[in-house]
Length: 459
Ligand SMILES: Nc1nc2c(ncn2[C@@H]2O[C@H](COP(=O)(O)OP(=O)(O)OP(=O)(O)O)[C@@H](O)[C@H]2O)c(=O)[nH]1
Ligand SMILES: [Mg+2]
Image 1: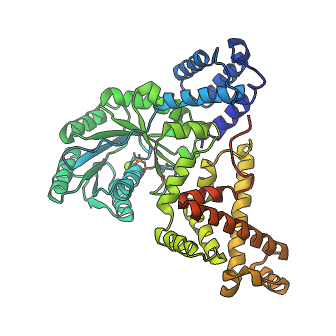
Image 2: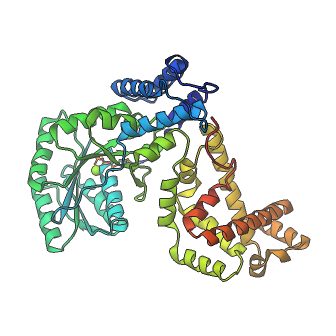
Image 3: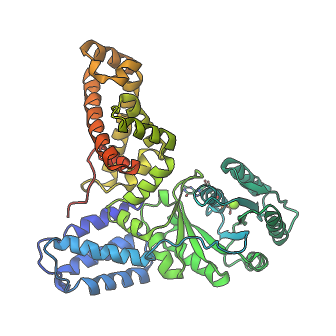
């Protein structure tokens, strides 16, 4: 996510060093580079101009406090401005209306509307504890209705059947009536892809909007289209009272132009970002966390939230109890932890949110991720090749046992030694965390096991 921009900006910002005060003169070059970095990231020009001016105004004359280097002081300003350009705080869906709350989706063809309906349904059901009904008003393709039905089945929400012979307004009204009958909280209405310049199709969705009076009208747009995403959102917002934007395919967007432009160009908040094709790849959009990610400082908060959702509570509680009883953290527990990390969307999703490792570039990050993933697989294989007795009490693993385990797991004897050492470190860490409490803290600790470590970028 936004690798190119992160790379450019962190290189640029590293140059503001060795100055006691930030002046127009000594930040001129850096500002020019920030400007270039944003233009290369396909941020819309008015946004770039505004952004750079605001940074200049704030930075010039800023006395650099003793605790910060000028570089850090400058980064703080850039971070604050990045946040404010994206909207300052996360805007939640406004669903507190007389139920059912209707959410209407709009967007170009292939933007990711139907996929997002599936993701949102899952999000509302699991994280907001809402009952959800989904319906398709895409009467142009039977396959579109079927696609939504399949997704609804996957995420376990009510699907309201529709047919291409029906009118979108009639479909939506029938779905809402059904939701009322069943006391369902939220109705998500999927629609056909359309262009803002297609008058007939725009009239259709305007009529739909009037008929269902949605609590939320979300514009779904592909982040990979960069500043065009903001321009299309603007065109739709002129015809339809949008309440927010969902940026999709952010997982494939190295530049970040859309994320930085949408709010400024349209005045509408980005409410969610899509981070993949699967139904759990949706995140509420937090400008502060994204700003931090863009600057290579990671997004530990989102990581912790994700950890708290995916962690197997029962197992976690059992482990905590066990540790509290004074029993050790054995290799079985270690293996469980490795598996839980895998469940958190793998190391890719994890590394994306960790502070950029001491100025690694994306290729190095990719290599580090590959190496770490390989290492994790190897660790699991090693633990699998041990006897239950060995897993409970690694102290008994002698030289000959090491050789046997290495043979069984296709590894070297020194790999076994390394794993036992790592496990010992984990044990120590677990002791600390159970004293202070909190699985989330532990997950943060696990991050430290990745190659390169983590921590603030060196400026
Ligand atoms: N990588 C990635 N792919 C996504 C994301 N969201 C959607 N897609 C993919 O984009 C393609 C189009 O998604 P749909 O949900 O069918 O798009 P749509 O807007 O409903 O398309 P139409 O109904 O044809 O207008 C599918 O292959 C999705 O898997 C995302 O966040 N990341
Ligand atoms: Mg669709």
